[in-house]
Image (spheres, rainbow over the protein chains, first blue to last red):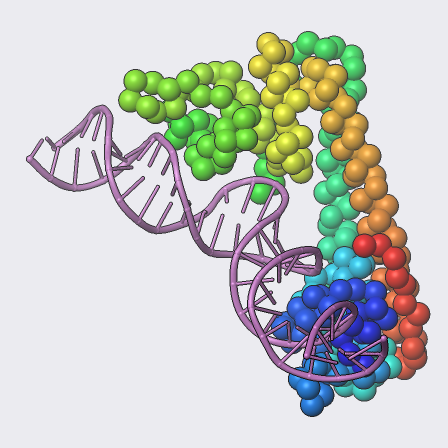
Length: 129
Length: 129
DNA sequence: CCTGGCGTTGACATCGGCGTCAAGGTCTAG
DNA sequence: CTAGACCTTGACGCCGATGTCAACGCCAGG
């Protein structure tokens, strides 16, 4: 199939597909006229990439999943490399949630404070960057 | 005081301070030689901006706090506009945490699945963009 | 033949908060 | 006088994924 059809099936733009290719994630045979020609495996790869991106993965992080599919596995996460990315991602999420939690508490505190006495100096907190 | 000193006291770069000014957040008198000249109020404003940015606020969102300080309040969050930003931010955080939670669960599920049977097709999930 | 819908590559624009370099002016100590 | 530490404005670079425009090639239908 050609790039337009693939884009439709995957639910993305041709621009994105070409970008994934430029990043070495989506190989492409060319038919006689120079048009990209995709097969079923490419379709699965493209879908894998999209679903991971939608979840919040960086394009780079989809690489192991793509490699895994290309290696003949029926699922992109059938390989240890990919599973490792899952784990890393979960840790990142935990860290993120933790930070957000801290900020949330801080803000709640500020709200309290602002509610009680609308005229007083507030303590600062530094650190982070 | 001049910009270098302010940057030191606030714990940021002169570049940042100039940037805040370009965004209309940090006014600046000029001394005879053309150098920016900051006073105590500017210091408080700059600190307010920094602490909010460190927390995860966008520069734009600090505007009400700055205005509040400039209006003569001793705290940047002494005004309703600023408090409203607090509330919005808390909502954003809640949304974000919720999404992260969903993704986390999904990933945990994938981990389980990948552990059990390393050879099977996995269901996709769409939607989001 | 011509139009229009597909494809191709290439390159610039976006968003935010800066870093960083350039080319100059200013002031102070030695 | 000069070095050098400060200041000025202006402008380009970055990151990631993608939109969008340009200028062109390919191909099928009327």
